[in-house]
Image (cartoon, rainbow, N blue to C red):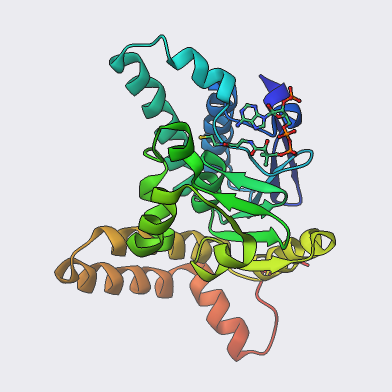
Length: 260
Ligand code: COA
């Protein structure tokens, strides 16, 4: 299993690297299962403050493995649906990861690879990376990734890009909200480090609570958000971390949760 993903955890940073460079880190059943397993473990690891998701070799991720999909030609509707649900669960586990997930995109993020980027909180891309929801070019559709992608780029861009399957630039990906920062390829690691530095100086429980808040507010009606958001901030204000954060600011000292 270990050969589809590389994982390291150093100083509270989990680095998850897709490691099928010969097929441009395309998803097969093994890679999907391994990603799911690793993100489930990360979700339960209290010592992890952030996750960096990257791809080994020339690109971030070339989407579903076309050879693996070839096998789907012989599968029934039910067997195909089970495979797709497994993939959906994997994306959801990343999307729901309680720690911030930073995507480090270089080369290409196509099909499921673009969907993977959409599941991350902060996406930093090399300026020469290419993106695309290219499924229609293969006669299929970006179905499993659609909830995550729509949550990022909205219907207007999904309609234009899902229907053409066209490839687009990192600059366009940034303009539609799929990417947050575009830098020269040589600056990718520095840009990721800058974001990690921001996260290191924030309260880790507050960071997780902020991510959960977004999910809950998106899922709620206004009537529910009034009490949900009031309870969420009240909880943080009475928590040890929230009190330490505010006190340290008032006392002009660094909070105990700041990592240097
Ligand atoms: N599934 C399976 N194999 C893939 C793959 C995928 N999604 N993407 C690339 N590969 C394989 C190629 O078949 C090739 O194999 P080979 O060395 O045995 O010939 C190898 O990876 C390198 O591909 P190549 O196209 O030469 O690499 P590149 O660096 O020039 O370009 C991509 C990388 C990702 C831009 C390009 O491979 C590509 O466009 N792939 C198709 C992506 C796609 O349509 N994904 C959507 C699936 S729904």
